[in-house]
Image (cartoon, rainbow, N blue to C red; front, side):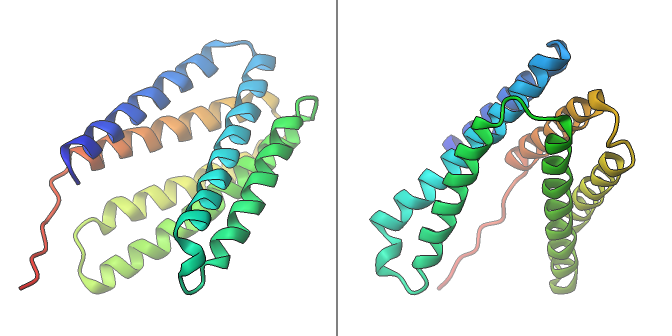
Length: 178
């Protein structure tokens, strides 16, 4: 990771922590609207970047259509999410449950693979995955409490931001091929 990439990751982490503090400090109704807006903008940007990648490079690659399909699905999901302003808190909780479960399962599987091949950072990946799964379980248990969605989202965002800053500050090993 270059110094510019490290600075970018640290800046994004600090920005996300500030956004989390803003969401926690805002009233409950404004917090829901901010969470829905953040989800929508994230999915829309992810979809647009995938479509841009397809238009510039992936159409010439093997399996490039997958990038096109991912971009279209993410863009549609983002635009749908932005339009969901007057919805129940159950939809936000379902978003949180799905995102934390999927992310946690992927992190646990990556940690197991890293442990199997002898990589060094498998413990941090495993703890991140277990925390994501436990946050999804908390969302399932307390799905009827409307204020908990904001707190769970913000705690997850703060935790991910701290891990992003820690991984940006960690020394990376250089691999030389001769």
